[in-house]
Length: 124
Ligand SMILES: [Zn+2]
Ligand SMILES: [Zn+2]
Image (cartoon, rainbow, N blue to C red; front, top):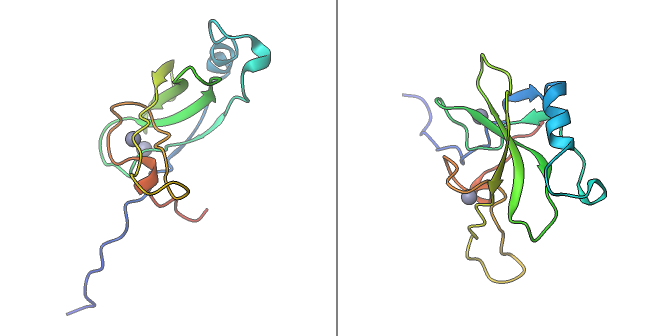
């Protein structure tokens, strides 16, 4: 009955949210960083975790300059908009592939789900 089930590769969640204006200000005023060293603020967010049923979504808001090892993230749920910007240390696990094909996880430390290099991003 039916075709054999082929498991889908793990996918990125991609749930979307818009960063509220007050959080844009928080991200802009990231403490301890000269404004000119900061990268652009992401205001249109898409969850970067492995597709999940439970728990909050998470997206990178702003990259902080290396070698800080921290970036600005926000979390939200399907019924609550982002409320807070958090500086989180990088996950930085690697896929262990040889140099040239190696990849570092760009998610934050202790994130749920798999690392970014194991996730397929769905077509837009
Ligand atoms: Zn999500
Ligand atoms: Zn990771």
